[in-house]
Image (tube, rainbow, N blue to C red; front, side, top):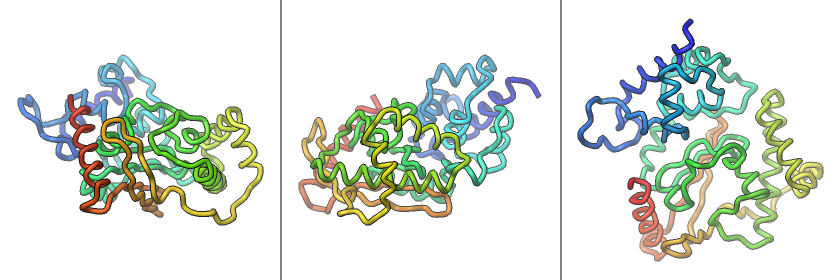
Length: 282
């Protein structure tokens, strides 16, 4: 099979996928119905230049992470996803690997929450997908790379985000995240990405080492992730409910941020989303 067959397949799928099918506005002055290269690159979290080189066969060895990102952005079927992995020289992830796929049924639910800040994490608490309102609230996530996309890493190593917490709440949240990561590692012992994450955290943080070796799986003092106060650079502090929905069959965590209607927090959230999404479009 020719080396650039992977790129040709990506191009064929991109040409047939409409913006509406992936949650983008249709826009005007389109020469074709499919996605623009820049749109797919943004959805997949890669540069447009790299996508161009992939499609033209000038980049022929995409990583499994790149394949997963493209498959997720294009919302392809299971059969096409498996073929895309094979063309890139990888085996499609099996049951012994942490799932990072968002199935069509879950994606349809996310599309219905298009005006609500929503982020989807895998079982290691690595960010898979964040919508535009989430980026408007928390800061743009498309530039996050590698371990920066992992919530355990960001809470222990950094960089710090916009959520304000007392030291007690922060410590309790970190302890819970490390406990959950230990359970995930036990469920997916063959997943090398989990092993690499644990090794990186071990090298970077004595706090992580202490929590990891402690092995405490007891009840937490409270759930510090339920109620969050965000320091937004444009509208000030916003206090929101943060509910985490678990998709058990695909081992996903969906975090949804809402405010009680009619409150100042609801008004500030709406303003933050409007201001942030306008900035992202420009």
